[in-house]
Length: 296
Image 1 (cartoon, helix red, strand yellow):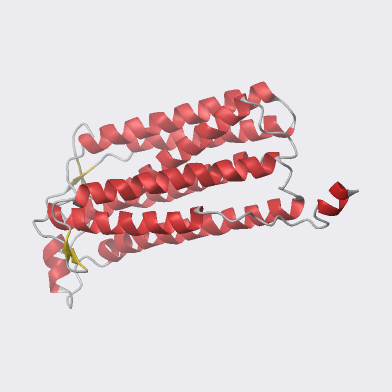
Image 2: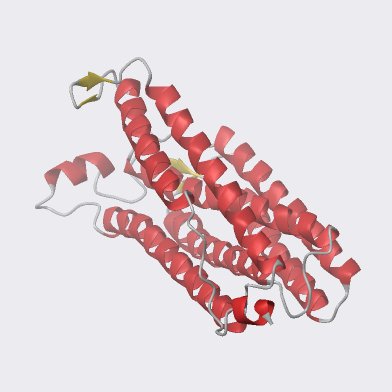
């Protein structure tokens, strides 16, 4: 009788007091200060904040913030997994978790919109008369004069095929999970993680052999910022799926309760779609009429 009175008579989960939101905010603040100080140091400057000079400790401030953020991610998600195992993820709670993931992906979409905006703003209007500085940066053409671009039908095409295949394998894993096929789930996740790692290696090789640099022109800056942040998201997504793989091997997921995997699959499909836009615009469209670097 006492247990019946103690058990909540609703579908919501009242979360116990948690230190993670406050600690995450602190870590983000330290990370931001360290990142700005580090960038200032790279160009020979320094960051003075609250009367303190962060010139000598810029990297370590950044590293401390990063460690705090990574620890909070691990601890907070561990708590969420524990809550799910304890039966707190009722249909209402699961729905709210899905809404949260949808809003997170929507914020990521707007993040990439900013980089596409920067790229198209520079590429569609490279020689506007009223923007003399821009014409000087680009030579009035796009890609800017003197810039040799990557062959879109070489390494970028390979990576496109790799990501499309990974989208297929993660869908296979999801289908296997829904039908109680644990072996298919594990195999599909393992293949997706492997393809994610392969994509990162191919992109790293491409960067090391790129015929232009970040500092060459606005082309290099927009190219590396947009594709580089996408590459970072691929690494995050690969880690996300790797955690799901370990959980699947431990028997955590069931056909009815598997939001952690579902969130990872959504994120991975988002990464796939962003890459298709990057490939079509920054690699293919921007190479029309441009000089293709030999062997790239």
